[in-house]
Length: 326
Image 1 (tube, rainbow, N blue to C red):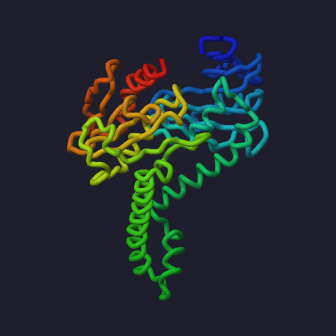
Image 2: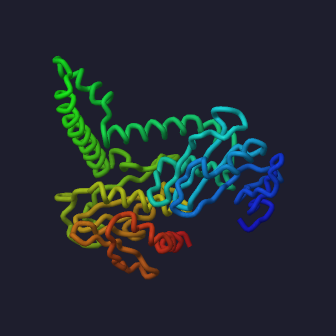
């Protein structure tokens, strides 16, 4: 970002009679605009109505990627619907306070070292609709609509679907959806404990990924030697594990990050060894603690209220990874 030939702040984008308009940032390669970025104040809604300059200049520039951000949320656009006209809906969304690991391989394609415009554009259409469908599924699971309720009610109920019965099946559908999601999560957690499958929400990576495994007691720092009896990996621990993976992916391949659960804590490990802990989660008591590892490999317990506060300690977590790399 310190190379003015690659990142141009306040990029002038005169269009017709409009003179002196500026885009916050233009990303260049070989003197050609590749991406345009418009930055808004944190908390500002990301709507195209308040991003007029980005929409207008996208139309007349060589850029195929438009980015609208308020610091926390990042929306990535291209021109899938009409050539040279920026789409109304982004093909990729990023929330830095709730990183979706599935977006990371696509974001890598936009980095300087791996920038491949054609690959991005090929994947953009699928990403756009997968993202949109996921949002609709989440909406239906949270607040089932009438069509969603009717779809399943007519399959299990042979009587007339009166207003009273629709109201009845609305409650039934909500309960069934909640139980279905919980059952699937528990299945994935059991699979993760047995190293039979991927961690819930884990990002797809190239090659084998070390999976969270039940501690055998042989290398357990607590020295309890009790094996896997009584160990239960919670959804919150899995969420925290994926947050740490999202934090360190900028420093090291995810193939070198693994998780291991014990009765007292969940450890995130470098190269899948207890001798190289990155951090620990101590979530079994009322007060949750994030265990950070200092330069002497001592654990410093930091109280946290929720897993999102792990992002407040990104520098310390990355410093631990750097120490193992160094």
